[in-house]
Image (cartoon, rainbow, N blue to C red; front, side, top):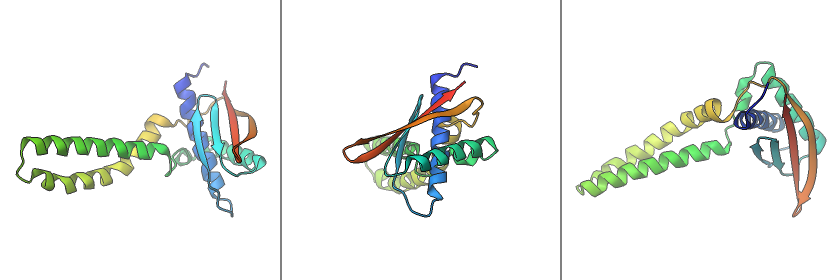
Length: 164
């Protein structure tokens, strides 16, 4: 089975999120940032390599065993991107309307548009994660290796995932 680069990214993104959920269950709080790509993901922050390996495997196993909710993470960068797109669209609408009519329309539309961005942002960003940027179709996915190195005093782990 051939898996496209974008589908590999989506799968890796889901595994990254599931690993973050697993790491979030640890008794000590961790400050981590991750970024997925078609080869796996990179984890930035102070976490033990073995702990990350266990969390990544546990996340992959959980996704495979019917816990698709772990593919979505509340602090994913997708959330910020969707909110920024909505805010930009709202600004464009309000700005366009205010240029056509200068009789207080801007002030009348500003608060409803801010409300719409706030109300729509969370469900739209969740939908974007579920339907566009993650995939729980993980047949053939396996963790190949995890490599750790340091950059400016920051541990960085590269998690390699294959999709056969």
